[in-house]
Length: 229
Image 1 (tube, one colour):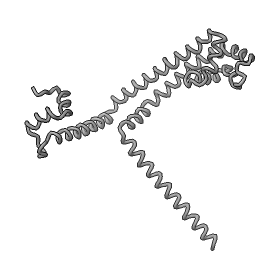
Image 2 (cartoon, one colour):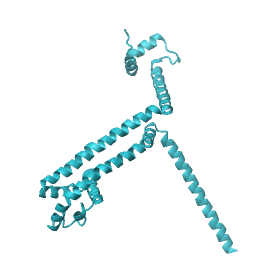
Image 3 (cartoon, helix red, strand yellow):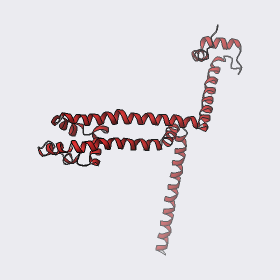
Image 4 (cartoon, one colour):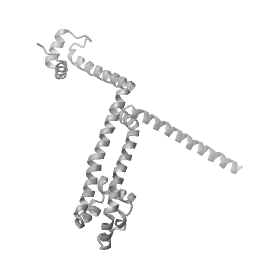
């Protein structure tokens, strides 16, 4: 009988824990729904989804370019790196000797050196000091990848998002509705400032007085190319 009570208590405890987890999931879903309603975040998420294929191909292109430079580095820099390693240049670095021993390791080294900026002084500087012409590989790879490929990726992603945004009529209509609602609330606030007697109606005198006294209303009229004259 005692074991039966223990089993019932354990089952009740497990049910409570399961209920708490469900409540937590529901709260998280509500939070995600509220966050998605933020216009800027919604645009970012939509951009990430629409440009995911472009980003994948862009990263692949970046990997191909880096692999080409890595192949050159393996052929030209690896023998020099082996000599410098034998001379004790990287006595405290166990991985430096094999940095350019294969294409994939060279890819990793170039990524750390160029993209992450992690080991420029560790690998590139000693190699360039020993063989100045090696700067052609390091600087060439840096210019090609950082200032060439990555900037090209940014340009293509922005162009893709702009193209997708023009095709997304539903989102454009929603944004227009949001802008109209925001503009309406803004104008209501201006008209409340102009409506001195709080009658709910604006007379010509109140409009003229507001055009002279309310700065925001003056700016609005100026944008609409309306002046008192």
